[in-house]
Amino acid sequence: MTALRRSTLALLAAAAVGVQVGAAIVATRFVVGQLGPASIACVRYAIALLSLLPFIALDAARTRIAARDLAAVMLLGVGQFGLLIALLNLGLQSVPAAPAALIFASFPLLTLLVARAFGHERLNAAKLLGVALSLAGVAIALGPDVLAGGAAGGQLAVLGSALTGALCSVLYRPYLRRYPALPVSLWAMGGALLFLAVCSLFEDLPARAVLVTPGGWAALAFIGLSSGIGYFLWLWALRHAPASRVTLFVAVSPLTSIALGALWLGEAVPSRLWLALALVSAGLAAAHVAAANTFGDRP
Image (cartoon, rainbow, N blue to C red):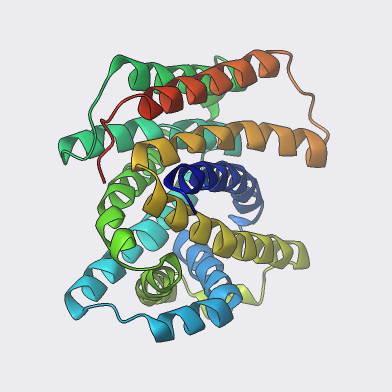
């Protein structure tokens, strides 16, 4: 497979993950009142890991990860799959899905800044324009007063979640270039599950789990299964494309939240959504065309 084709497939995978993130935010908002933030994250990744285990185990058996790298991958998993989701779930207790998705859409900009700080990528006007257009599209889609309903603490938790994801996405890259995505997923999720299992005990997960409604379990099953597929695609994309280009597709998630709200909840689709879609598309095009025409993206 040529490098160009791998890069194209990586960006398509990232776009699919952007849709999955938006859908998972809506589903998490549905169930967040029934379990604590860490408990939801623990159940989420237990399901995700089980769904991928047959594929992961075969690949992991053929791939030996050095002990030094293994510790780093597990620690990054605690951040990417544990702390990020726990902070996001904490924020969703007080912040509605749409504004939470808007705040989380700062992920690409934060990733670009983190990648620049680590010397992995160069900033240029076209990349910044692409991120700005995407975020402007998201802001227009959600409306001028969309943040009014969320508590400041919840908003900061969601922002902290986005920052955690940006940092981990950049730091994953060296390990994803040395090892296949599936075994990295196994050890990263395993490290996160150990962390989340301990945290969930403080939320009394065993007692609260029996009170979860059938609809809540259906939402958890969807979140877990889609996350298993989504995070494999995410890590594979990070292996084959620069982190700032991959994470730019997080801007798709708020638009997905709006669309699913209209489809599943019967909410009216605002006319400004079409302008938002145009801006997000223009932002993606600007960032990726700029990256394709320069040599500023270094692994």
